[in-house]
Length: 535
Image (tube, rainbow, N blue to C red; front, top):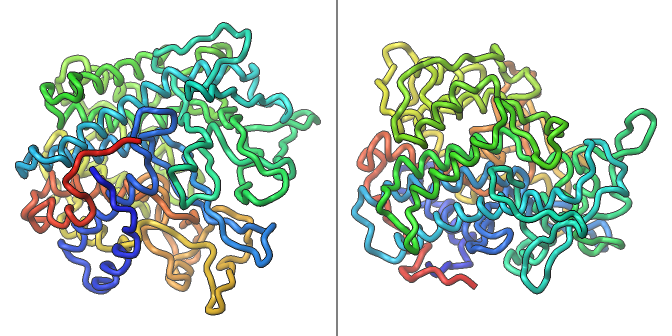
């Protein structure tokens, strides 16, 4: 797969032709544009630390040390294993559609098998490195800033080293870190000024953020240095201390990984191999290992067994019926038909400050088929949410009856409308822009905020793209009233995995012809038919 670097101009120019006339052809072309953009701007395919793990976004910041001030880009891998799960999901559904189209003998198909293997291997790498990285951490979740130790890097062998004297060795047991990339990834991602891999991140002493516990200065969630992104600023450096403490594995990371692993098991036949290894069996083993790390209903750090996960995301008691059904699917291949998952949180609408629990519910119950289709549709599409993707996810795996007669459905017209709203540039929101004179301007009042809340009218007034978050189907909802500021916007350029998975699931559920036919049309514009070259 020889990658064509200069794609954004082509994407934007082609997109302008159909701003007011989005149709099947343009939606398909956006898919291949975003797919190529993904593996050039957000992923470095390969087997080394940091490779084959999707970055979440480019954050645009101001280099205040420059005169005149300039914009700089920080490439971030926040929640990287969530995005790894979506990447696996996109590739699994893509492979299914290529098989349906009879496109299994070209170089792209071979490269796709390699990509799937690289992504599965990336999780194994994160599993192997977890104990190594956490060997540096203190026991508590509130540690003075000077006590968070950077992890040592072996320059010769290109790997992370355990804390000297700890006796820790890599262990493959289902406990994982979210990302393992080093600052050398900047050599590949030339558009980025700095990176934040959740392990390695920009740091400046003046950007240190302190919280206070019992009168002592301490840091929580590893937040210090998070907003530093100007590589020209005095004292700037990358430090490998981002593992602590909010970056521990948590159930939101686990559930999204399970989605990718389930879809690989569903759509990749056992005899499909890369380098003599069955991709389906590899995914199945990882899924069982991941669930096997639970102790009872709780996921814990094996190096810190006497405390809960610092981010409070380790206990899956509320979803345990579904997790056990997914485990059974990995073990036997048999699909669940028992609807016994209970929704614990009531409405969880846009007024609620934390909608992730709702996302966890619709993801895991879709994978396990443990809630009635009517309830799944309700919690995907009501209360201001537009998460019809999960309705399609359930249908793609289990093919339940359509429930339009009960007033809840996600139709072909719905999905085409949703896809058509995504700009050709890809999901994004610009907090900064340039004026006619070439000087930057700030399009928001509070320039230091990373998140922005708007009413519906403010969304229209500011011309915010409706695909303006790192994942449209995970963290965002529409406010229920005209004056309610719950529509949260995060500035940056995003990887587009949400669009790609919605598009592929739509073709699987509704059929290629209904979505405009010829799945691979225009692919050759973005991917030459040559084997992937890994450097």
